[in-house]
Length: 279
Image (cartoon, rainbow, N blue to C red):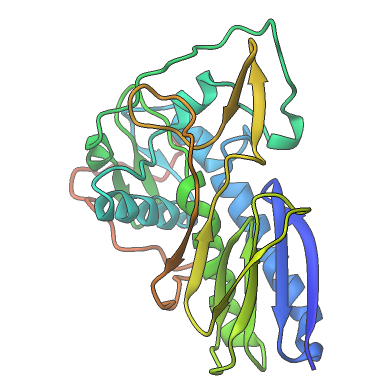
């Protein structure tokens, strides 16, 4: 017997499915707890988040929760794997295009000044991001983090890891269309993929790993008569025309929030007395 649950977090829809119905209350609670932690630390739209503190201090070391260190490391690994096409330093171009608040708060503005075409950071600029596993991040001057390209899939991995430890059977979690399977049991999960909820879905089956999807038809807004969305072409930094879905490698155990990923570079961080946060 199985069960499902839906709720909202990180400004998007979250879907949970379990093989064993008795697991559902715990599965929903675990997902909500992990996503609350991720939102408090990694949100670009919360002025009190660690990520916003880093973005307010480019070029300087900032003391952060190790959870953000992990998220930044994941984003940098994605940049490395894609030759910089998946770039964690798009915070400023997205803000200039009008994506400067939680999507539910975005409104169509015809008279709001925005930059129509914003240069992206150099493709390799992400290589200048530095992390400290004890809890520190430094981004290059003139840049800002946005972890939207990897953050939801990484959060789904974190939830799946928690499920493997605390649930009795297999489960799947989708965070805004990025999903991960926990404790594969050789029984395929059917996944319906659509651009819009009222369209006929394409159904794919997965028995392990995960799936990452994105669309240009949901997160859309208007600035000065131009339709915008959150997927950017490289040059200039304008919304991309096409989108798609992509399967992910078989899921490896995601790092729990309390265990940061190994740093790309921590030796460059000068020793400092105490642990005062940079402001």
